[in-house]
Image (cartoon, rainbow, N blue to C red; front, side, top):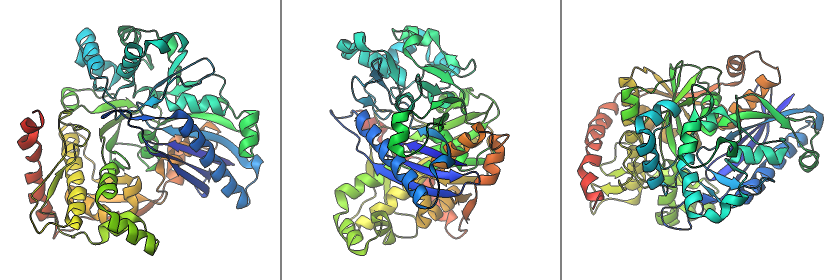
Length: 506
């Protein structure tokens, strides 16, 4: 039996085909752009995303079949999708506008209105989502208020999860619990849409798709899509999870002994919890709590809107020489950018708040900064400063988790950074923890595929699937010679935000 894990992210999507042991038989990837119609706005064209989904599914399936797999071997497709994005669709699930992404904070006023009506703490206790303009619910309010001409034709407000499943063949759109937990509209204890919240936003829960548990079979591949992909109509469509929860599953997180550093376009810290946690310290630090991809467990998450995105920004603006060199040498441009970076802590520092700050400050007015520059500073020093500073930011959040009782000694890194030994070692030295990557670097794809395996009865539990399919690759231990130097630099970094806070409000 073969299982397809489909991962749709902020700047691209990928698909991978696995057997029941987690062996990969084919992969495909396609990148797409984030649209910025106005400064501070971030959107995506859903038709471009859909075309990319078709491209990677066709590519992964074709690669597997070229390797000897047969169409009848394919059993199920399961999704892993970025959170918070939202768009209105008509009854045929045709998008009525582009999708607004979570990194878009235009709905600040609407967020404040919801907090005034219901209370910021009540919203957090109910949804586990710290009230924030990135939430899907205030964004829906913004659409209804600023584009009222769409309201009469709107059948549902959907994320890419429901949109993709419907187009693959699901009879009616369905959203998994983890993804619903990123909307700021879902009651994570009752496992249903909050009537109180949705009504306060000015519409009804009938305009949201049915929420279902991870692993539920929501349909079968349509005849049209089966023909397009070269598969049979017996392929089942399985509800998956929000991309961070699928990544965590693909990295092997089953309990709180291991934390996840999800470092792709954005960077997040995730931990599994046996119980819902929305205590005072979590509320103060704006830690999200939502339903995990393992039954009856929760997932705590802190995320910054910039991770790899910041290094990409630097590459696009300041690394023409490295891009040209990478092309000549047929190397990854980021490997070329980092191979000349100093090995010791950078003297320069970067405040990576290029889209405001994430937890624990959650200051939308904060902005990025580079400090400590001298006439001797090189572009290589700044690359290292970006890497160091992003990891310092992660450590600040890690220490908040420690304060609320999560004591993990190992951190598993997923995303593009997991392929960089240089950055992995930096993380180990700054965090003073063993930092681990897994064999399957596309952890979200594997996570989604393992959900499908459980749904198809290959394993009695998702835990059994994880223990069989997830394999550790390398372990990076802290370098005792560098840990004290990074500690000193870290404590200096923790003062940087406070020093610039008032300046950024001018």
